[in-house]
Length: 252
Image: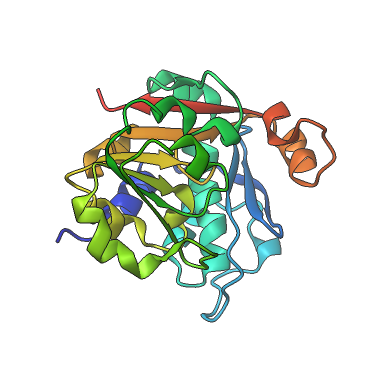
């Protein structure tokens, strides 16, 4: 097994030292980081603070974005969410994502994230890491569908089933929150014989992911930090989609 930190280090190392953090915030569901170049990054907020934090949330503004991005490696998962949001503030800046070959998704709605795969997964063995309430109906034509979740509900498999189920799958869809809880390196290793699709706003819009076995990246790009904050606070009727867009790129 390769060093599981390599993926994180490569994402962090690409961030230039001159970009700084303009604002950082941990919400009830999403962490948000705004950069000095108007990057608006977000990542799933996990309320796990059993390990000491490296910084206070109010201490991050003005720090180098790269330094805050390194918090993605923290075992204080609330802090790690801020680190991933910082990574996304850089990699998922729309002009940078477009420059790296990403393009807007046909439908700017996460509820439609699985629909483009309806035909290709028919008759296949499919796993979804993370309980997306709209996944099962979109993937109903799969021969077998396994939904794995850390906090499972009726019908889900516990996430520990990944070791047993993923090696036999044809398609594996992985939530971007797996970057926050550090499961992504192992999930990609277990899915190396499958078509792997990263899904969710916590996913960096970076082709670096292709080097680690990802086949398709679906992320969220925004350069409207004020609107993103308002949308995640429920103040915009169109939600996050008024502040940015879903973007995607397949392995070349």
